[in-house]
Image (cartoon, rainbow, N blue to C red; front, side, top):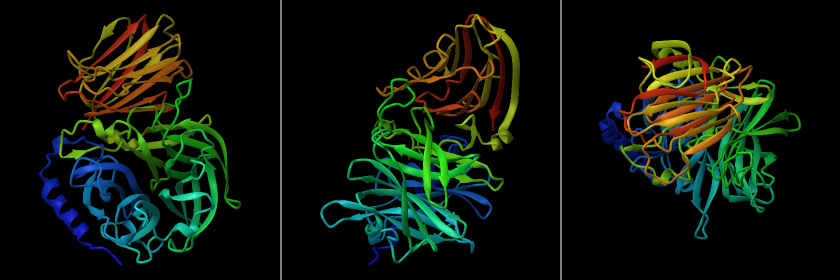
Length: 490
């Protein structure tokens, strides 16, 4: 029997009353925030009826995690978001303990399907997680009376319904497909593949991949898609171990498994593994296709290991990364800001010079900008270190420091103003490509996203820095031949 449907009505009424009172200037300009309350994982990222839809894990009533709803926003350019009413609340027996993460796909007849994890009592004092379906017109959704549509009977041997969540659904070749995460009886993360003719009657097909006691344990938030000449499986592992080379950090991580996929046999062959993002604040990425065929990704710009101690400065809390285009270069997953950002460029500054010491440039400052620096390492044999500092004043700054001796880059927000004892530094490999090191930094208030060597590696981080810390400076030890291009963003 369904529970009271008034939970959704109450959430929407609360949004109308409380969210409308939050000034626009209190939010980032192009990083999606919740209308009010708490946000975590992106859900249901898709293109539907002329707009991009982003749903998200949502608790409207407080800035801490609570019984999960689905928030909702739409955009025509992947940068500026308009909030829609709350899409789902935990108001049926199948999801009484929460509407957890999931995804969306348009139907051939023009409706929008949401496939999500419903959390319910297991009758033994605990909970179980099963997959549920809702269908609607892009604003209002009706949950399927037969929920859960993927229940315990469809789990393969050894898989657990205690950790069985985060379905990614897509429609292809006349069939609905989805991948779902589970943890098996050997404490290994597994990604399960299901198929259905109508998104209601599902059949378990196979296990695509298993963590193999490496790359963490439970794999959350899977995504599975073709990109250029590869097949990619994206996962967000819990309980990662760090690696000696620094490629993977401990805790909650994000991993891209690149390989090949035999559709007929439903066999995924893993060929290489890499982090998706090296930063301190990046989790649960989700992708969609644009109408012109680009694969675009958005992630939660936070980290479960540190989020609960983060300061609550507004009546909303948490945000998404900006949207990024994905592509393969030299067998590696790379990322760049969506090209739509170019429509926001203004007051461009372009400089070429040789730097030996410290400098700043007129017109190159602020907390909303798109800054690219190309350091000609081949023409700078005496340059031992190069440092970019931003969000800077007399007391605060965040730095990006490159060492030519080690071809290593250090992102360091230790002096950003944070009073929390959390990871503030990341080290990554950063060898110049064709003799040039490229750093592209996109700032949006407290949100910083760094793209190294045209997206070969990325670092996402939040800054606890006062808004009036606007300075940007460059420093070198030894002569550095560089080219700088800065765009304010408006």
